Image 1 (spheres, rainbow, N blue to C red):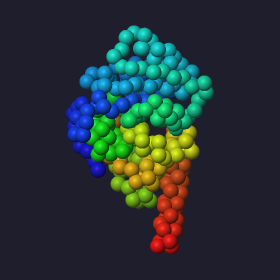
Image 2 (image 1 turned 60 degrees about the vertical axis):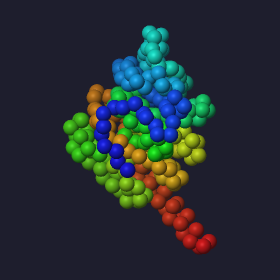
Image 3 (image 1 turned 30 degrees about the vertical axis):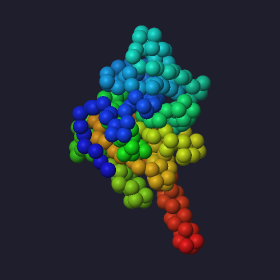
Image 4 (image 1 turned 90 degrees about the vertical axis):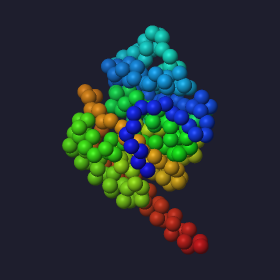
Length: 270
């Protein structure tokens, strides 16, 4: 299901209030000293005091990312900020896995993945959270592909745009999904849904994002999408495009084969 791009709003759950749900934001950060403060400042005013925690996880940056986070906290802030710096670089997927384990261990109900480089708009956090709080979804993905032409207008390079569209179409065909984008890093999850899949066995690299989708689809979880703006600034891309494409397609094909084998086994039993 695709949601239209609407102005940022505070979640208004039909079955409860955000105050009754423990929502945390996981900010994955690597070499983000120049953007982290800007990202934290942009968390919407109406949401800041309602968040249980904002967890900044610095993946062993060589710059002042952790120091900037501590300075932000020391300067006085209305968000409950927790700062962790890994002793070694865990990788993009590994950093997420550490954050999701933290969310499970600390009793969060919802976790939103936000990037410390500012590529994804914190202003959309309420829209990311609302479908889960309203029990309409178990995961919500911010998609740059719902609004026709918006990704290119936002500065997405043509080769990335074409690759995104081609890979997404192929992955939908293999899995039976109907996502507009498989490759956005802006995501919100029901923590209970994460706890039920074995994400610890997934990749520590950028293909983690595809593998977690495959796990959620395999578990029959509900995935919603909302439209988000596209922003490409001066951040350095750390993704090897060809290697990434090969890894995510291999994972998708393997998931398709596993699903087909399971269906065949169930038919034989029946």
